Image (cartoon, rainbow, N blue to C red; front, side, top):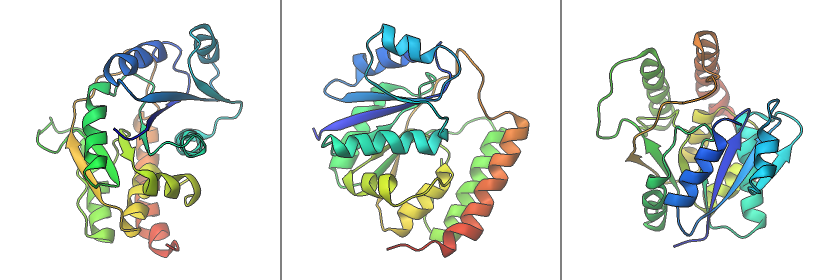
Length: 229
């Protein structure tokens, strides 16, 4: 198996991070991990120190993209071939990570852990948003991504280098548009995700509307004029 690093961005995940790491250690044998503490204001850093977890500490809140990019730069500096973005809130399941790395080794550049590849879910406002973004990505790239908001993603070295050095703080689905325009091969695999046990999601109704607006503006107006080398 290729040398793989699991990058776990964490913002105020003191109540979730121990369980997340336990899942990784139990179900992702042969892979390493690093937690990026993204300027947490709770006691996340104390939990990381107490457990002697492998972590990078940012005193500033970089946001999700910045935290993941920090982890990906760490992966490149340390000679990893594959990096996996894996949430610190307990919603992702490490049992799927080997399957995702296998798909990278089969020739894909990016593998997305998708909730909607082969299973239908009850219709929700979040699903509506995901479908709108999926349609926007298709219009711009002619490629269908059924779960563009999934944060469970594996990147090969080509895509990893693009994410670490070629992008400047775009929203998550926009990274897919950029990567597709760079001719990266993207595959989705079916996964199940868990409900968050502790803490609150950033995406309340107000933030969801803002997020959706930002996504669509970025995909339709910004990404088409972004230079792709």
